[in-house]
Image (tube, rainbow, N blue to C red; front, top):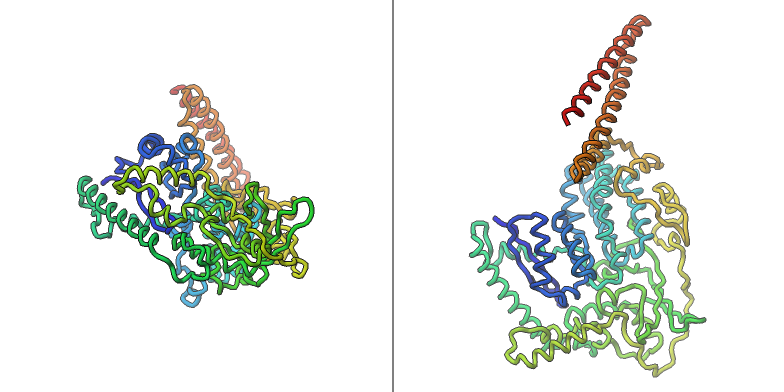
Length: 587
């Protein structure tokens, strides 16, 4: 058996295709370095690698370390993202309690609690929840407080170890990877709002259970033939789907007749954004920057970008996940296009609901979005005609490839152009809505401001500009343990001395192994050995003092016991000193 490494990408239609397969001899760092730093630049080419913006990986340390090296060297525009599904779902299976941890009467409530916690963790990776670093730290502190609340303890059948185990999973196995999963790091990066590689895992499942499945008993030659056959079928399927979209016309979006040149998935996203524009109010800003507008949602529906159609029935006010009320700002770009600070057009390549609200506010007779306002990747002609290798007329195909390559180089990243004003714009003075952006704590719609202040003060968040800002990193090295012990509703959280020393000793041994100079290593070992001897003697004195204190019966017995302890301590010191001298002489 050999490891099978696959590289997949996503088309504008949402289809996944595999563009590279590698049979590795092993999973060592050397193999991954050869793949990322030598094979990809030579086989794929730097021109294509420069177009990649996001690489989603799982948690293999050998793979991710060498990918980071290749990103710094060969494709610096790529941002590595840690798969949220592997972090939350697979991590929960390994480190968190299951449904059988509580009584059957509370199993339904416990399942709903697990669903809320997982959704809370996913909210850090999805758009619409935590769009800034400050909002992320506020949401993180609220989760810590929620896990230590009496409400959660009651759902957990009054078993204190269950919320403690969940809290330990979040702080030790999720938060340390926040630089690779947090959404605010890629708010303006083109990645179609993807935060996991579940679709990639689906292709692996198809390889094992498809029509020409690769079984464990196949050798490399048979497996390669079957994988090649599966690839040909997948390419034919994608080409057929693109050709069908190119020659067809969707009837379900007749109200937006100007979007027929956009692929089906792009049309559905535009229809959603176009419908949501009616729930926003617009006010033109006056002053120095005249070409700017403030956009605010007017309904009780919460603005969760990307979740409006499927989760409209959720009552967000009753969920513990912080929901932020934002005032969007739409400005005019230097190229004349509209730019919104929500970042939707940068991430997806389609205009957002806020820009559509501004356009309809300024031009009430606006007909609707067109293919000129979206990224070229959403065009039907691009999906069907660009970079094809089955076209017999190579000359015409080369011209098309150069044309689409040029269009991709000057692709739209800001938004649509403001159309010509043929009618009088609406008056913003008639709308009685507050367009001023509140402070960070004041814009949380499902938390009281004083409660959030108490939570932030409890978990080391200090006061700063325009609200609160996090200045401590509640992640590892047991700093969060002290914070939990000082909180007003924290349960009894204790950690053994053995576990505290375990991580430090492991790190010390790793540093000693990395020492190139043998003399430096010997000096370090001698210094540590002396400190260990002193600490061992001191701890033994304390342990024997406690034992002797608990077994005292009379003053005579105390004196005898103290004499015996002193004799034992002196003998121990002499023995440890002799042992250290022998160790140094042998080295």
